[in-house]
Image 1: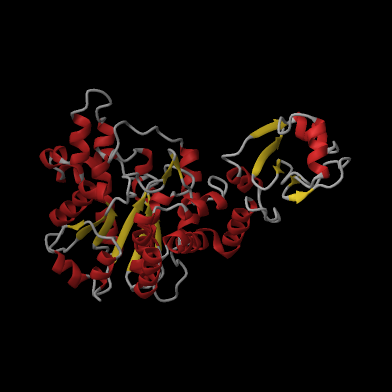
Image 2 (image 1 turned 60 degrees about the horizontal axis):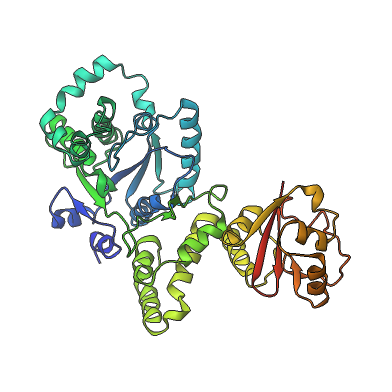
Length: 425
């Protein structure tokens, strides 16, 4: 299979700036390409994963890939897909975000390959000393207002009654266009890849290069916007982004996000986000048709992506955490994971002094988990009360200092399924 056809089979092609057959021909030879990442947060989100996976697929196929982190464009904010202007980040926050994104990308791209290393660049490096007057004379004069105004991202904001586009946002396409030209001159980069909403910014770059280098053959390729079967943008859960760092989205919550994938999306997500071969994906598709209750494609998807993002140890931790609500041990479960596990169960907060060293009977009543000490004692005598999934058999049992996970929370359980999360203040 040609690499371009492979990308299509993996749902990683929306459109390209040249005829498809020409793009297919080009991708049969090693190309240098780039994808940009704006440092709007200190780590990337699951929504960025399609771009990361695309770069990784190109690198595995022998192409030279460049990941551009927008230290300069991040100061402006990409207006694409926005109805309001982005909040400006401080220079210090941008610096922290840049470091976090560099770390994220290093998990998926091989920057140390002896034969085909990925390249990481920061566009602030070529803008920091570029004075505004020379930039306007040398670059700005090459852009024409009519095509700039015609771009969808501009039109939507220009026609808005409120939050119309600022001049600062309007210049974003010039900066991204010049990025492509700089990478073309510096690295011989001839292909820019981006999300479907980046079409206008990508064509700004191809047009600029063709004006300056009429003989150059440069192109753009866009990736589809990934949504689930309900039209929800991928990477969003109840309005909250799913981050690639465990301190923002716990390993358990990350694992569960993919485990909860709808049947209608599971096979498509396996094609987009994993390196599983077609034969294995076909097996999983057959399993989904014949035994949907087993949810094997979702389990494999969750395992593959959790392993890729958090490593083998992270996957094991997520699986241990997932077993907690079925009575499994809390060994190795973090406080963040425990919070995620118990997100939908009743909870309360007590000062540590009212928990550690106090009898479980007193703690359960003080927290509001049980109504009376008599009820608590009867449950213990009948083997129906557990602390961190371990049955308590002595009504005089006192909560040890080691019980709170990371000193922050513990889990109470009545019977088999009645859980309660107790946080320590």
